[in-house]
Length: 144
Image (cartoon, rainbow, N blue to C red; front, side, top):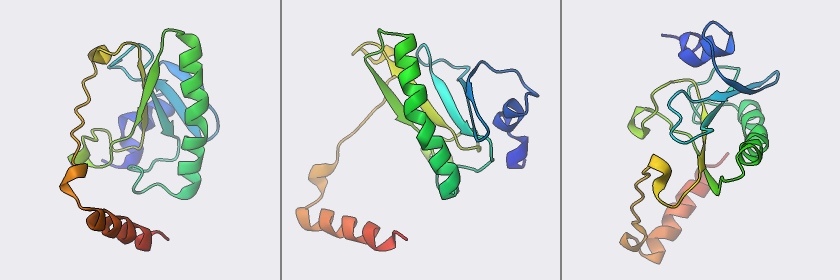
């Protein structure tokens, strides 16, 4: 399957119906059919790219420039939204299931997970200060 054949490309081309939240020349945002919480929205670049690891700067800029606007609109639409998870999975190992880059906006209403149990295990104490400095330096040296 090519990126142009993904379900999101078909949604963007209006071959498959969606619940559109926002659209402009570069980005399409629509409700995630799973609705992990009420208002769960996907922000998708119209230019197909697999994920953030393959996105060019222009595409990434277009998506991330619109994320706050759409997130604020969700919060304004539902005043009981207390916060929001903003996430994007890259590659199968990170639970990416549709290989057309998308950013999830998942409104959070209550402290009790809202049915969205994101398990977060901390491992900071597994590293010394020197090891953390080495990790940071290694990443910094690869930034182009």
